[in-house]
Length: 119
Image 1 (tube, rainbow, N blue to C red):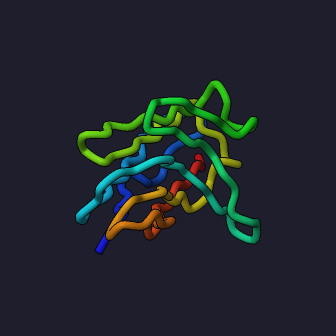
Image 2: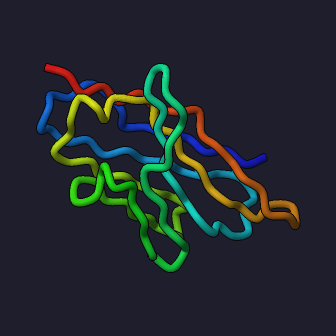
């Protein structure tokens, strides 16, 4: 069984910072892309940031220059450093990864962690 577990969400004031963590566990042979998505109330889930196993990153325009995605391959872990947070960043944030397990590549999701930006 493969599991993705997120942590690090919470309540923060506008302009503040948070770091999200996601760790993949199980008999994982390899991880390709690792991503962070978010879903605000009443809206569709959107891709926030992605990183390849080689460290190439992509970001949604709305978070460029404020968020940084990184990973530690040896620990099967991905991070999302969020700075200069805005109320519109409020959402449930989900970790997602393409994982080689049991001889096949599959798409896995974490359970989500709430981020609330409010004064």
